Image 1 (cartoon, helix red, strand yellow):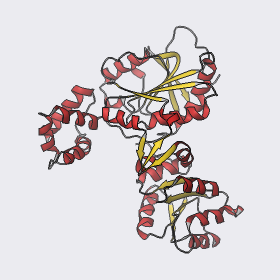
Image 2 (tube, chains in turn cyan, orange):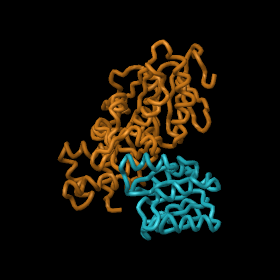
Image 3 (tube, chains in turn green, orange):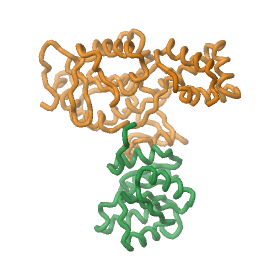
Image 4 (cartoon, chains in turn red, yellow):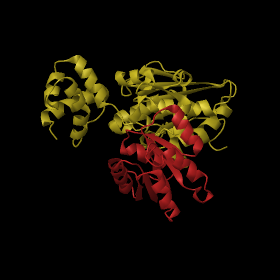
Length: 126
Length: 279
């Protein structure tokens, strides 16, 4: 499974990289939506994108709408990971085509729970 | 690890005496993790000092018992049991309860209530119009029951397994927390209940969720609990245990049926059930 982490915070990318890497994902990173689109136009085919909302150049919401307008990327799972916690924002992101929404701060389990919910991760029983 | 052997012995005996929960050798880290926040709140330097205080302070002892019996919980924990609830249990009960149009569920050892409210969300979505559902959430921890009654959860808790669509449908943001909708809140009532002690006056339930709690009990207590639960479950009802738990040792009361990845425990009855699973 390939995951594309899209966040302008290097620290946040590092945290998500570690969580996803430990769960067996191949991780790629972009510091804003435009860089992520460039990577995907360049041939990167992520199974899931973890997307911050507020980023310079192109924000996460715009990235979601752009991805959803391209049929080639219809199978890509989109999950917002953001501090934006207003219900209207969540509704807006889901309506634009995001599959899930995680509000920062989160625990590693929260990310894995959501990926499990989306059928992208199966927890190995202890 | 900083908890001393004598402090752990005391905590272990306290948990066993008050709740029948076993803190055996190797669980020192767990006892310490659960008591450390209370120790800090009480201004104690470490858990050992806190345990010394426990021995002379009944109020603090109550808090410690609460902390020692808290289970990790998340929304729709493990997913598959909830899928089975909507795909197998509910259709069967909707057929069998068509005259009373009422379903009663027991969320035993409910912790902070995510299980009870997860079930409430499913009932809200899948129960036919005009039906009523009652969910009884019980726990040995009064602090946990207060949390269930408040229906409020912090952000970190909300992220644990709750689909975003259900969050916006059923919760309202209140300050830094999220509050469950009154419609779902009213479905759930709470009651203090120690599974290891004789049950108070309880009604008959159609579904009992008793998940991930039997593992904390000794075998004889576990057998006793499963025997007593049988008296409070309808003949065509369903019992769900945790995935690592089994009713193997009380076969005269329970049979097992497999539904996908989930083991359902059905009461043993002397006459055929009205409708079998999957019929």
